[in-house]
Image (tube, one colour):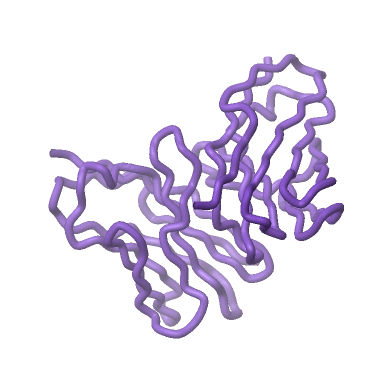
Length: 110
Length: 111
């Protein structure tokens, strides 16, 4: 069975600092990988996705993620965060259906 | 821009009531999804539909049903609401078989 683990429930970081939100998955077959963002009191937005090809995927708002097959990871990164990046971030994995992680709350402090 | 509209942001219903949550998308997407979101559990798929009048059970379909009579509209029905169905409900649509565009959510409280 596929599963997704987001290793941190909350990540506090200062503005303009780099950030990495970690995501590991378990699957014995090829997967599609996704990151979604949910701003306060809003629905989710698709941030980026890996379907095939280059393992480094760039998304909206300066975020990127790297697919590491050997580590079964898909960590999300941003080199310099803004206050407006404060949100909850969800990693998701799809084989025959989409399975979401529990979410990581990113809190950007000034 | 794609728009997915959920009819209510907040709802309060009584135990045993039949509850309808409506979702409309304006981009002619074949695929539509209903999720519930609970703290610490992420999103869990209730039902999805890949065409009009077609539906598939997700991970937690018990206590729910769906209706898709028109391509743009996907309704979630709680046949007899219970307190453990208090949650945030999110509708999504997509051209692909993964959810790409979400509505703003309906926070349902069952008392």
